[in-house]
Length: 438
Image (cartoon, rainbow, N blue to C red; front, side, top):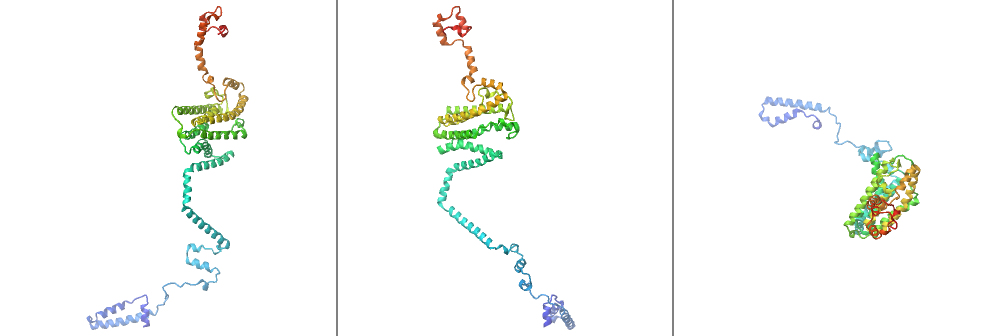
């Protein structure tokens, strides 16, 4: 039985067993000789199987390997790490027990508590109806938030610009913020909404004050100033520049407060006249900047006395067009007192700046600029006889005697000097001294 059990657990199965089984099933169908041969074969097979099975050695009696404990079979003090590594988990294998120090435990506990408290506060805030009521107010006051944010960022850009570190985009932000607080914020504050002229002037101001930059871009391909003589950088002291800037800002706010509601401003021919003045201001400013750039080195240092374009009528057309643009804004909002205030502030400031520039021009060009000053007498605002003087003089030359003079002469012919005929008077051959009492 012991040999049979070993045979059953053996990895080899003798073929004779299957043969004996088949013989038992059909024993009656075999002859006696065949039966004898079968017994002999069966006996031989059993003896061979017993002899073969005696050589089998049992190498494994369990289906799973034995897990050996590191405490029993290892003298290594880091027994925990060896057990963790034997489990072959990537997260656990990188685990460092030295991380759990009292300081780290307190720190991470505080972080987890703060995160939980913040999550609870966020959920409670989002579920609070008063939060959504106050948040809905931002739908009304969001222009103020945008304007204030733009102003704060513009102040930061001004600080960088004072250090000559501002980029082109940051310089544009400075200008856009200034125009926003000049043209958009005041009317929106006093009217509660925006429409009409404030929006128009917001874009017109951009177009107007970027003329110099566009000319520099056309000439040099960029917006950076070139090296030049610093004496032509005419700048008034800060105690004059700051009040002037504040006056322009206050004047725009006064105009928004003084004028009627935006929806009540009438249109028609008045708006046509305002558009015409805007066109004149843009035209004069652009051509003045263009002529000055053509006769200047690096768009800063003049090389000749410019007497063309708008310089035929006023000596400082760039300043004059700037004042005209500010005045047009006040006129569009129907604010005459604010118009006078801004014009007065501009004249006081630009007059001081024009004196410095004219002093430099006299030192540089001398007599030619004196002749130009004699020819063009007005700095900012041209007089009627300067603009239309040539046309009016031509009309006066064609007319020898006015109708009133003709009537007086017809009634007072006896006052004509002796020896002077009426034809001489009519032809205008006599000077003023020959007219006697006329």
